[in-house]
Length: 312
Image (cartoon, rainbow, N blue to C red; front, side, top):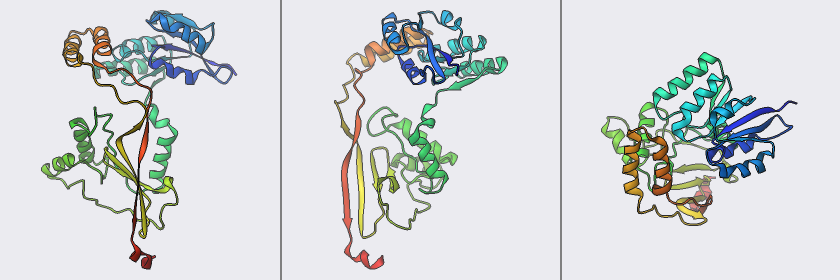
């Protein structure tokens, strides 16, 4: 089997994803890498072998004999690099977001259509085993109607934010979800708009028997507290989790320079100086990175009702 020859733009950062595609002799191999930071080159040789082509020039990488290219550069460069690769008629895996403007996204799509070249945007979570399993359970009707779960970490901090609340409200108004876990703020917004209160359950989930294990329990939550309900009327077991309980080091505090750096970054972006803005945010506004942490269980809540044994 001939391996697909893959190039990587932005190999030193998010481009580490390309290691998943490097399977020489099994169908694909990373043969060329580009990064402006030459300090990562030795790591690339370790990952992809001593013969991997290394360059600091995107144009030079695209001149190589490639079957596909992964574009993992900073967001503001996505449009430039994607359009260049598509014009060179090289199929593209493009990290999200496609571009930083709608017009930029349109130019990428127009180029792909004109050149009839494949373009894939890296919405990779939909291919994860756990996400596919969740979709299968919903499609099979095994867990009832979809329940919206807002991730407060994605919204910028503990306890959620206006961004998460408004997004949740819009999803509800569009009819994308029938939620029983809306935040109180989203519920008030829905009622004020003349709709029903999304915190009131419109349909109930009934089960024939209690869940035998965690995988069969019913997940509920509000983005801060989560629970797995086993559904035993005589001896209910509810496994609890809470957003602040993690294993690993504490999250570092934001640096004191963050506020001023954010304002300066805005001005750089307005002037189109995206590279300088990106560097300023990394150097002055972001907290130090820490190793991945694992969320831990809060505990089990057991509720025993003696009289329910007569209802079995």
